[in-house]
Length: 309
Image (cartoon, one colour):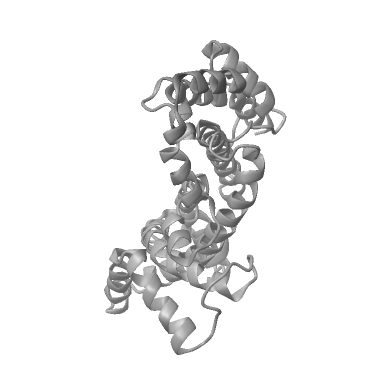
């Protein structure tokens, strides 16, 4: 397995090179001129030319790209075109951390509720409990978060006075409960349905009947054999969830006024702030690659039958 992990890590720079070069090229030759956006009503051809020279935008594309990547490898993603004098790292760093905390709290809620209930109702197949719970979760999932957030905010803040109505207080603040459950409960439906079907599939396997025939306790069979094997498809879903962990809370950030990266990234796209867009693309791509690598590693721990050479 170690050889497999090393091979995947070696491929990482090549994947990021392809992604970054395509993004950089599209940003350079795509519609819209960032210089025009920056100058606005003050635009003149002379000012535009001087600004391009000062930003190095008049150089060949390959020179610009390799200069940018040389700095990016050192953690320097350049200067924002929209926020002059501010580095992209300083603009994105704190916002990415906020979005990460929001999404990780929602994922924790989704995993706890989805896995536990999915495992439970698999044993209730054929009774009224199974379709009733599945229906409730599907209905909950179908309600858009922009509808549920205002009602949850009104209930928890104005009616019950459980949490503050505004502001950002970090991961352990009570205000985190609102986005955690608003995003986590609908997301748990996916984990619940997958866990239910996976558990039912494992329950029908021969090795489960063999375990019962050997006289193993129900607790041992449920935990060591059924649950462990049923989690294998869940790991794949977790890896994809981790890959999008920085971008799935945009609506919640917008409604609640949390200083996350979603709204800032949208503004950067409209402002043609290509250094910000490229930096976020590189960071997101890196997270995606490592999330899939993590899933492959976890497979080996969950299922001993899986081996990598």
